[in-house]
Length: 505
Image 1: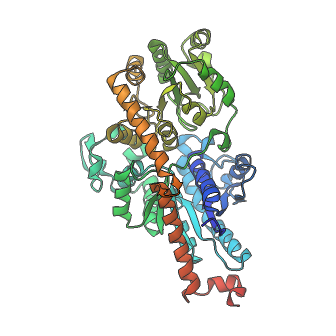
Image 2: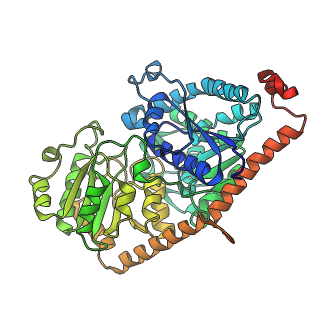
Image 3: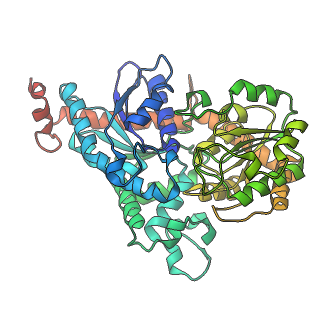
């Protein structure tokens, strides 16, 4: 398909955890499939993205207007990275205002191309309303879920069914996803635990999720062989094609809008001084952090276990997560000085070159919030995970990784749990020392790494499952284009002729 330049329009939700896999997919479509890509987002996000694209990229970045002040949000708020948790729902609801301006944007694109619409519109899971716009112009619409099949299957079922409301027990099962076994109330976010189906977040989530049924297909940032349970759930539940096209990953050097942190070569030089499989990497992503007490407990555990570590530190809960980390206030007295003197640890503020760190041979394990981007980055390097999920589907990613895949142990759960340093130290030692469990986790993580590499291969005589799924998706989109072009059926009657009369000629 590389001979023909098919235009694909993409619009992710305004959060780094969503923009990153969208950009990775955009680069795949451009570089491997010869597509032209129009990447749509709000002005400040587009501004950050400009510095992230490779110099030779033809991806067209297109701004869509958005004024956060109109929706009770702080001025210039265009990304969840700059928002406290209590304003996330407000931000989600405000994104509905993008619908009319996105329709105009698509109308303009069709008009500029003399009535020839894009081959496909790929939208975020939170933007299922885009199906209506796509179909109005006869365009194939796909939702791209940057997360994993299992984790989002759990979220999908939980929000639609609210099964925890039907029992007095702390444990429950999902009525339409029995394969996922038991869940515990501690694996629910505060919003989900309090939801009754009539509250504002339930109304928003259910409307958004039911919109998935209107899509022409679902793209998942996962691998068929790894994630069969979750993929089977969506195929059964939605009745639409589900294409696992992952892993869609960016290098750290290509990530959008990274904050000042530490240079990759500094990390590499430090890691080069450490033995193989001797370093613990710790990061909770761009939007998550621990309480003050748990930061102290984690620091104590690191000293007690005597492991080498790189720790991306962020201010604790209740403070601006993007502000300076005050080590003297939030870490045990003398901790920073002791680890510097011993050479055992590296404290990094705000940002670290995660992909480069995880791919270094000195890394033995990753203490993570189990966000799906971080999970894929770890597993693509064969690194086992110590899970401390904080929000969203992270709880179910951790459950999947531990119970189904065997590459994770959970050490903490949620924003308010209190974990003792000795419990953290035991989990670190279990994974990093040559215990039977640790060895088996590393072996399984390496098996997953190899599985993921095979999935994206597209060589003479061999096409991996993810590469095949990408071809099937593009073929389906082109088939819809062909049906529109060769039939008298035009969406919404004469809309394309009205936009560009030259189509009659």
